[in-house]
Every structure is written in C-alpha cells, then in structure tokens.
Length: 318
Image (cartoon, one colour):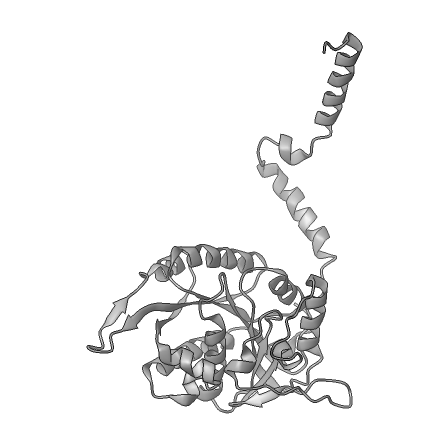
C-alpha cells in the first residue's frame, strides 16, 4: 500500500516528536566532571527524605553479619561469633537478632522454639540461651508457616523486632542479615547507627563477585567494614590431618584488592554443621576444638574493632 504525502509527513512528525521526548539516559553522550556538583546536590536533596538513624536504647554497638550469596555459612558464623564474644569476656552483654524474616534459622541453631512474653509496655522479652538474648521472626510463627509478605510488611516487622523488644543493656547486638543487598540491608543502614559489618563468603568466584558488590554498597552507605571471613575454603583429611584446599584462596586476594581486613579462615568441618543442627554452637559444645579457636580469634578481632567505634549510647543520631 502506497502512503500519501500527507501520511508520510504525519509519520515523520510523530517520530520526531517522540525522539525529542527520549529520556536523557538514552541521549547522554558521557558523564562530565562538571556534573559532580549537581550529583552532590541531588544526593543532599534525597538525604532529606531519609529516616533519621535512631539508636536502640541501651545498645552500645550494632554489628551486621552479611553475605552476598546464600549458603556460605553466614548464620553459622553469626551464631558462633556472638557466642564467642560472650565467651571471651563473660561480663559482656551480647544480643543476637535474626533479621532474615523469610528464612529465620536462629531458633534452630540456638535451640529456642518458644514464643516471647510481653511486658506491661507491650515489649517482647527476648529468649535467652548460652548467655545471648535472641529475637527472631521464627519465634512468632509456627515452624511450618511460610512468611509471604511484601517489602513494606517485612520492613515493619523488622522494625518491631528491633524496637519493640526489651533488649536491656547490650554491649553489642549481632544482626544476622539475609543474603544479598536488598531492602532489609538498606532499612537497617538508614534506620540504625551501625558500628560495622562483617562479611562472610566462600572463595568461589561466583560468591566473591557478589560479596564484592556488598562491600561497595556498605562503603557507599558509610558503614564501617570490620573485615571479611572466608568460610569452607578447605577441609582436614581424617586420616593424616593434612589440610586440603577446596576452592582456592580468592578471598584473601579480594580483601587485599579492596583494602579491607581478612579476619579469619574457617575450614569446612561436618562437626560445625552438626552442632548448628543440634542447637548447640560448636563454641559451646566443644570450646577446645580448632574450629572453636578460629571463632574465638574472630571474636577477639571484632571486639578490638568495636573498641575503635563510637558507642551509640553517646549519640542520638549519626
């Protein structure tokens, strides 16, 4: 079908009009150095709408345990680190928060399966085991129930797990976060004055690439990075006790490249998983083991790191 001249002109006019409406990111040639001031101005405007960081009453330090991918042993590290912190100095009051609303694992690992009581002020009383005050969404739902909430409901639940709990005086609240760099992490960073974050990874490239993005995110958000823990990189031979490397040593190289501390190397040992599944952290069940020694060294380094961070008891916002 042959188009008339009027139709051709009409089509040209339509195309020209739509091109002029094309978003800037399609037509922008390059990012200019002169745009830096404009970017800073926009960031300042956005920051005005962010929530103020409010400390949790009585809690000196809040430490996140994070990972890029799931299945790297983050929750196991969080539980044993918190237990080790309480072990190296019994006078310390340590709390453990399970911030993984969709997949809570702290109830199993800490052998806690009751529902928390409420105070007269409607504050939840954290459950206690091995000297740790614990709170988790797993305490509020049945074992077989699935949490099927959208983001806003999850953020509301997380806020209640943080602020509607009678934590009392804590030297450190260890927060086990879900994998990735999603809404939970952003909400925690925006709402809480965090003392730092410990990153956990295995040395495979697939895991390292994702945890590298996590480092970038926390640095951009101004969260101090305590360091990184390499997990399940090697295994001990049961016959000769020699160490067999499984996935290389990429975590140390990445830590050097990024300029962050390499905190500890935790070997792959079935006993660690067995203890977690039985609800007794290996730091408690076998404190003299090599695995416990690694977690205790990690706790010592983290405690030293926290000494150099400002206590939240001396600030109202950050």
